[in-house]
Image 1 (cartoon, helix red, strand yellow):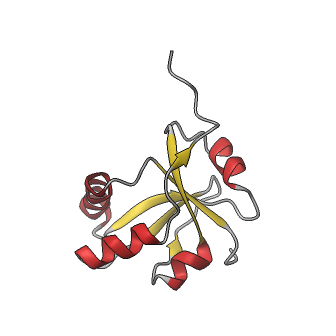
Image 2 (image 1 turned 30 degrees about the vertical axis):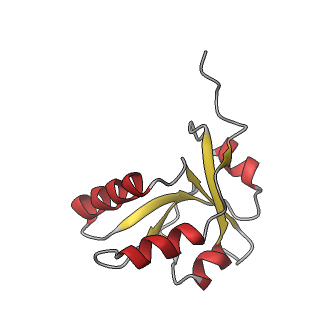
Length: 115
């Protein structure tokens, strides 16, 4: 993993969704974390397509931007699923810093369109 590697989070990263995801991780693992996707050397579109993100929108960052904001991308599996570990428990400042480390939502061009 290098600083330029793209990190993708499915959805718009609404605060309620992030809090729910972090609470779910805490209930299962006793750590606060959110799920993201990263495949070394791949572009945003390649990551979204490879992991088959169903979300109509995605948010994008890089390992380097997340590290600079104080977050580590960890526990990556061979299929690209990773975690961003959060403070215990995350504060309002933590959520704001995490959101600022990602670009604004963009359309996920690889998502299947609903008919």
